[in-house]
Structure formats: structure tokens, C-alpha cells
Image 1 (tube, rainbow, N blue to C red):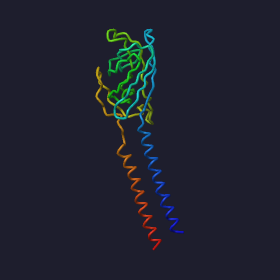
Image 2: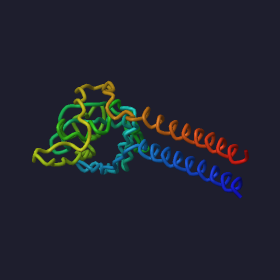
Image 3: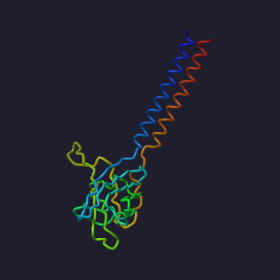
Length: 214
């Protein structure tokens, strides 16, 4: 009976440790999932162009800006601007021109947290009529800022890590590195530790079984 009990215990212990490792890995994967926001891109100047834009943080310091609008005729320049649709600032990043299908997809080397950082200022996705009529805007969408949290001391602070402002340029802004995967090495170490514990547990129970048999 002792040998049977030990055998069952070993199997149960290994199964429990493997389940814990799988759960930890799943949690790591879930935390690594892209953060994503959806914004409305509203018509301007009676253009008939409107739709939405999805901004997805890829976890490596880049953000995918995926714009899809109705009413576009193609070759509409589009940019990420500083400021808001009501008061546009300079162009921060050039995006792929909106095509005849109303689509524009661009990977920019700026983390989503930077684009939404209230200490840097608001940003907007703005669509122009054409390269020849650049000053005419046909649609625009404001990117919401991250909310501020108030700590015990009363001073407000952002709920995410601070990030440097992207440079005001007409080309893709160099990666800042903020928004890249954090804690990857420690997560791997946790999983490796669990596997090692499982091996030690099995070895120890095997030794105990040998002692009982003797």
C-alpha cells in the first residue's frame, strides 16, 4: 500500500507543478498581449470621409496605426500630429497614404504609451485631401490621453512609465525602447524554477520509494 500511495503522490505532485507552470506561462502570454485602442475618425469640411483607427502597441517599442474610412478616393496623405483635431500641431509621424479602399496601415517606432502620455501632450490622426491640397483636411481623430492617478501625497502621476517625447519629424520617429517587453527574463526564470522543482520533487520521491521498498 505504501508503494502505491507514493506512486500516486509522485504523479499528483508532478501534475500540480506542471499545471502551475502552464498557468504561469499563460499569465505571461496574456500580459504580453498587445494593448489596443479604437478611436473615431470624423468627417471634416463636408468631405464624406469618416471611419475609425485602431492603435495597437506591439510590445517592442512600436505601434501599429490601422485606419479604415469610408468615402475615400485614394492618395490621401495622413499623419500623426501633435495637438488635437480642433487645434492641430506639427506632424510627428508620416503614415501610409489612405488608398481607394479607405485603408492605411503603418507601423511607427513610437510606443502607444508615448502617444497617449499626458505629460507629452495630445495627438491626433489627421487625413488630408491630397498632396496638392494639403491644407484641406477631410477627416481627423483624437487619440485619448492616459488617465492620471493621484497618489497619497496628492500629486498626480501617470499610471504608466514615463516616456520621452517623440521628435517632431516628417519621417518615422526612432524607437525609444519604451513599451518593449518587460520582465521577460524573470518570467522565464520562474518557469525554469518550476520545472527544476518538479525534477527535484520526482527525484526525491523516487528516493523515498526506494527507501520504503528496502
